[in-house]
Amino acid sequence: MARLWGQTFNYETVKEGDELPVLIKWMMFINQNNEHSFYDPEHLKTYVHEAIIKTIPIQNPSDNLDWISIELSQEIPMNANLSLLGIITSKNSNTGKGLTITFGIESDDGAVQETAVAEVTVEEQI
Image 1 (tube, rainbow, N blue to C red):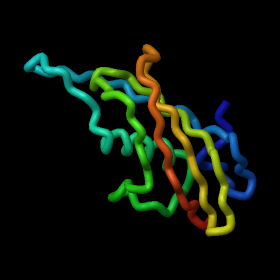
Image 2 (tube, rainbow, N blue to C red):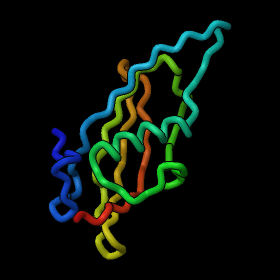
Image 3 (cartoon, one colour):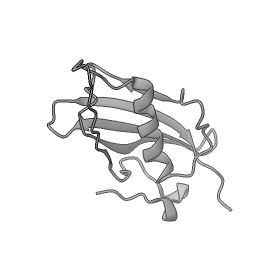
């Protein structure tokens, strides 16, 4: 069960194993040419970014998502509905307020099971 929420997020109480709320993306893509279309891995990074910023106030840039890595073992069809579940896998307070968040990316039929990893720095709270 998700324990982290944007309005109540506190870096000091975060621990490894904490879950972010699940982000679900429904896609309805109609290709007029009946060709197979697939998600661009860079586009999947925007979903990971969205899941993070809805929960954690971060300092990472939103215009360059190089701090997110996507590990795909297969192409993901555009018509696949996706769910993203993020889990805090590492907390590093030695170099500021750093977190490593690992995401499972799954399709609604269970056929797609991929991984994304994000290294984030939490904003100082006033």
